[in-house]
Image (tube, rainbow, N blue to C red):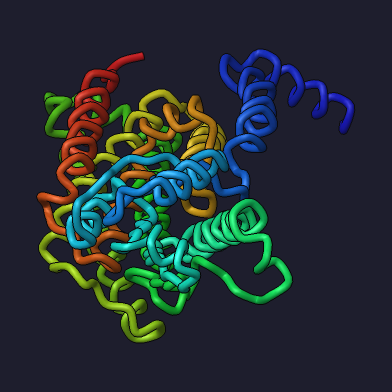
Length: 370
């Protein structure tokens, strides 16, 4: 009996139009993409420079920082407040402010402080970036002493000192960074998997055949599937916000209407993706496997653990088409920075685009007959 049962199972597996491809594609995707993308080495941090001295030494310091390969200058501002806006708009990760009389103080043998402000929304990235800057400035100090002031080499004098500041997460609390992202994960799993499972379950029960012979338009049917999961998503995100407040003392710095507007758009987008999966899946096993594949891809390329900016450029291009990544940026910005629609306009347009694209695809791919 076991012989014939095994023979049947292998025949079903081999003859299946989708599962054999997934058996080969999934391990290839995981092993070829994720080890490169999921690296804990921090690279390509965006740097905002405020050079109040414009001297030879200040230019040498800036060159030393950029030559390290860990930083790229994306903003040059005239004042610290202008540079801070670049952090609030996600254009910079670290601000380096060089004070007035920077070169003069060094030449006169006086200590001078350089202000380094790190965006600590991602506490790990902020602290590592600060460590890199400190190491580079330490090396620059040694260069100045060895080349220009060898008589100070035996002392403990440091021409340049660092005045550090962590923005938005001063205590570098990793929970503050993770909780908004995990709320996005909850929305993704509930509002992405449940619509797919719901329709496939109806296919297996045979109720879909009864619906398909009725004159119900495709758009109406898809809309009727979306609305319940929209409500489920709102309930889930509200529970998540309450738990974040009660357990972690975390409340959004921004407004709740921004919070719920982005959540509503994302629920619509990810539910549309779930319905697309259900339109192509014929069994619950196949639907679960497809959802698991996309969830792994979305999670690893979302910036949940590894900053997207630290990934290779080709992985960053793939991550740009990941709706999970964009909502994580939004939730962390709302909770920690208090960002509004103007500062999150790019993510708003992208998420609206995903919602329209997935739901139009869901309607067009739905077939009332096989």
